[in-house]
Length: 197
Image (cartoon, rainbow, N blue to C red; front, side, top):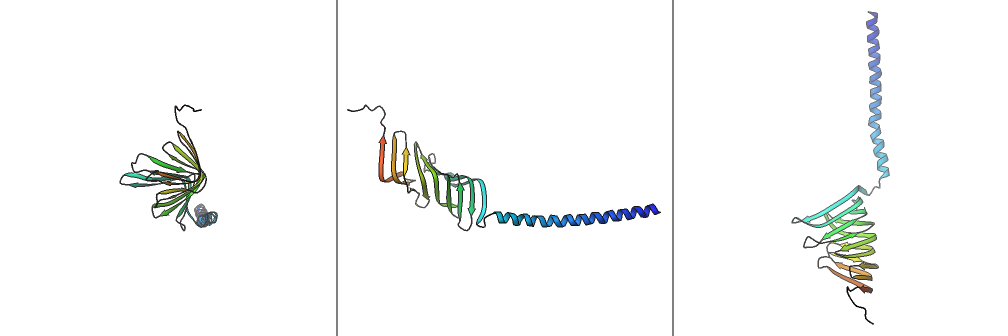
């Protein structure tokens, strides 16, 4: 009989101890995520709503790609309705759907109007590639409503038979018109041309 009472007392003591440990563990478990969220909140900037890697956004109309934006990293600034991107690549498909104009840079900002791309500003070793032409500059701005790319600074163009330097450039995307301004230096290379004396 004493053994039964000793076992019962031991089981009751063990149950109370386990309940106490369980209660203590529960309190710590509940308190810990709050501290972790508070620490995480202090690390993030208050104006950044999302931070994404391998960012990609595409506009398709009538089954045809219109534009595509990709980036290594992106931060969505909800208050500004703007996306800050690292390593952006903007691709604009022409009306035929086969040819595209590609604009890339080291970093940039994308301005949105709902789900639509309103404007893109790229800087840092900006390259614009179209057919066999490659344009290089420090900064370029794409305005979707005007369907125009503005290059406000010096630009160099290399093509199969052309080397060109200008002080600035304006590209009308859909009609495929390039307008160079300021001093323009051009070197044309003609195949099978005989030198003249």
